[in-house]
Image (cartoon, rainbow, N blue to C red):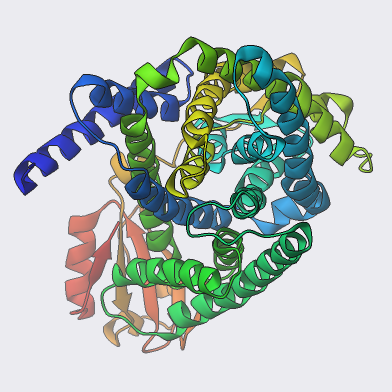
Length: 497
């Protein structure tokens, strides 16, 4: 029985090794998430004993909630509005078409390899891996400063962030149709009704709870700014669980809620965004580590399983995904053939399909272990082949350009000596006149913003100042500025970077 100290020690070692692996992956232009998975495989092979699909599924559910919400927060309406129809079509019809094509292929080829799979079971296998993985796409596209023309990056992010709900519904419906443990069998009519209800309820609750979260964050007054992030995290989990309880799609709800929150003004938004960036990476690492620990390599690397996984993976990459992509984008003329070809290639699979593959396992569907191992092989194949060629394929299609890199983004925190201070205007400051240019300040010092009765404006030299105005001052002459504050009779000074 492992004790708490040993558990924390092992967890810390796993996280440290995973982060170092991510650094190596970035240097060699490989998907960091693939190496996180490799770390889990390494520790799970002969060091740690872990075999709990239920716990993995639970951790995966929490991780997906956070990843989808954070992805929604980072997506700007202004960027996705021009490509909204294309993204929604790919996230719904594209997933369904991919699942049908791949399911048919697996059903036909499985007996040749030595597996006897019914068509519903083959379709279930295909459905688990029918959606592109948001964690993989977000991490690869956002950690490489490579721009994509024709608005492709927001389109790919929108598709990957919103197509998991469709795949999830297909998986749950097929498990019910196969009569998995704890699930009542369901017919075609019931499956269609369940699909419509899940999507409609998920979208509605996501929008309403997103609006409610914005209102709560902006109206509640918390002295400790860090607690706003905790409050929003509670809203995320409440949105998912409440939506799921009333038979809606919780994953769709949290993604839409994230879109709403991210595209509205929010108190302490920078703090909240930084918090979610960090916790998203943490749960991505945990999710991939646990999936690596769960896999039994002796079973996954059996010859029959590898052959089926490689054959299905290649068919998915080279046939099913391109056909579904070109068919779904046929009505939309503004995308070039090169852009459509690139979209069909960047159909990365990652942790989400492996998590979905635990659902048949937990439901005790016959053949669930085969599904899990084949999906694992297909995911590795996708990350190795597609994940490592995201940049090179964009250049090959002539769609890549180098994004401008800010010289100040990192320097503002690490290298710039200037500091912000906030003060209130005093009578002594206005003794020479009530305009800004009459206030004596050291060189290399600027009043960058004024707050008056809750309104903010950037002042010019002739701007009038009033008693009670709050000034935001930027200076790299902090000692001289402190002496001026003393002369001005300023007692309350708020300092921050």
